[in-house]
Image 1 (cartoon, rainbow, N blue to C red):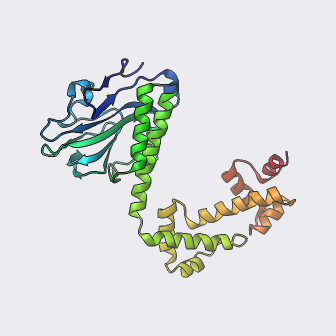
Image 2 (image 1 turned 90 degrees about the horizontal axis):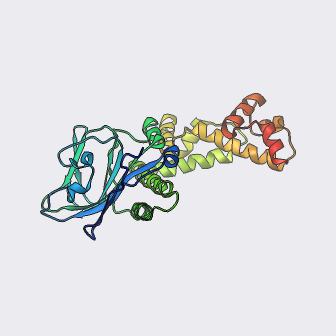
Length: 304
C-alpha cells in the first residue's frame, strides 16, 4: 500500500512546488522509489517551513527536529541557514547539499533575515539501502559543498517534470535522476578531496603498467619513476581509483587477454604465457572472476 495514497501537490506560489507521488507494486519491485520532491523559495522574514500544512505531519517539524523513515537530499541554491545532525552544526550557504539518512535525527532552517531557495527529493528502497550498507552513504558524509551545479539542477528539473506529468514508468525515470544527483554529489566530494598531483601520479603509474602489460608488476620500480614511496603509491592509487595498483594491473591484463583470445588463434595456455602468468589455472581463475566465464568459454562465445 502506498505510504501516501493520495498525491499531495502545492502550487500556491510560482516559486514553490511540492509533491508526494504515488507508487505501484510494480514500482516497488524495482527497489527504488521517489517519495517526495519539490522546491521552495523562502523569502526573508517568513517562518519556516512555509506552507507547513501542505506537508504530511512527519515532514512538518523540520525546524524543530525530526527523524524520517527515508532518505532525503536538500540542495540550497540561495540564502543562508543552519543544519544540525549527529551532534554537529553546519553552516548552509548557496551550493550546500544536506543528506538525510533514515532514522537519523536532524533539523535545518534558513536564517530569518535571509531566507533561502531549496530543492529537495526524498527516496527509499533496497537499492538505496545497499548504498548505505556498502558505505557509499555514511554518517561521516552528510554535508557537501557542490556549488551551483548545472548537472544537479537539470536532474531536479527532470524529477519535477516526471512527477508532474506521471507518464508510464515515471517513478523509474525519476529515480534515474536521483541516482544522477547522488553520483554528482559523491564524485564532486571525492574529487575535491584529492590533491591535484594525485591525478598526475596515478596516470603516470597507469601508463607504466600498460607499457609492461606482458610482464609482471614491479611496484618499487613504478614508485621510483613517479617519485613516491611504494606505500604512498598504494595509498594514492587506492584513494583515487578505489583499486590497488595490483588490482588495476590484473584488470588491464584480463582486458588484453580478451583481445588476444578474440583476435588470435592461440590457446588459453599461450595467452596466459604471453601475459606473464606462469600458472595457466591461476590465469583462468582471474579471468573468470573478472568476466564471469572461463577463457575457454570466452573463445567459444566469440567464435559463434
